[in-house]
Image 1 (spheres, rainbow, N blue to C red):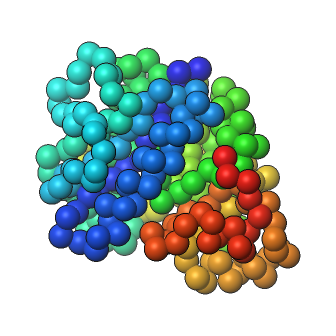
Image 2: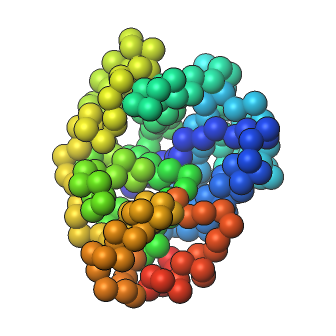
Length: 243
């Protein structure tokens, strides 16, 4: 199955220098592992960043004038204006970037969409194979800490494109303003609870997880790795074999 892998992005040269490192790290990680997901391209769908240069050669694509074909492995779809996040539960920029994946999938005939946010990492072969082999449905892992679907990792198969298309059209009509959290709004067909992982870069979540399960344990994925730390630093706490 021809697969689209994407993250949403906002690259700001005036913010903390860790901002650019976040995207460099994501691209470097998945660029070397696209084969595990049946993918040949990476996409960053960008919410009007003032600076799109984070150290990788890539094509900058205009969402209003997309090319007939994709020529480079790394592609940044750059909206000219920034919608951002006006309030905590109104993240217009994310909704625009996320739902635009439907247009990309339709235009370039992708059979499956894999959404992995720019601070999330698939660590296990077991989870990578599950994602690669999924052919039906709209699937997300489960956040044990929050008790709801983890929207930072999503598998959207072709049989659910009609649902994503409806969501895209609704988002456009609303100027991408839903005023509710995506975890409770997206029409998942399955929340897969068998994989171990969470937003472990947040100390309160990390500490709760350490109380859930005896360490070390096999980690399938994690999110919000702090830019100052490496995967090897995390392996001192968690047991994982790097994908």
